[in-house]
Image (cartoon, rainbow, N blue to C red; front, side, top):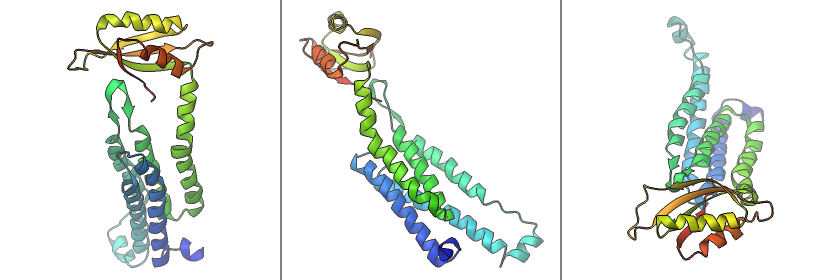
Length: 240
């Protein structure tokens, strides 16, 4: 550990390799799900962040050894923490590019964005040689992004609040859909007709936000009841 904690060729190689593996492990799950930021993206971000910190360590080491006289003559001051700050600032722009507003008022890419940020911080820790932090962080990040995701979806499907988007033949069919919803004891919070959605068959699309009754709180039953209406052309639940 003394060799790895000091600044030498072996420790630099190990830190870069650890950053590459860390980013790759996190990015693999995103790539498997065909997300915009995948395996190579996460890996390169982690390596780049580690490189940035290694450069700051290198410059600090040189300013205190071979460059000491030059630094003293020019009254040079060095702050290695600025490198990490600039990495996180740059990641902010990259992460923002993964967040997009998709159809039906949904925002996608938030998990990818925060994953990029966490991977960059992880790369900084690798570059700094903070090994006791890196190893548990890898497992915690992967657990949060991969293991907890299906659990979160399952929880939302059991929640009484539900938001669905329905495509139907004509605007007057809204009353038919409302009757089916209210017949099951659900409370409708909002109906938002999507005027920006244009279909060749002149059909209409709307977002229904509601709260299911305690007695009939099954999302699938509500969706099936609405889907059985002859006027309904398409339907799916919105899960953020």
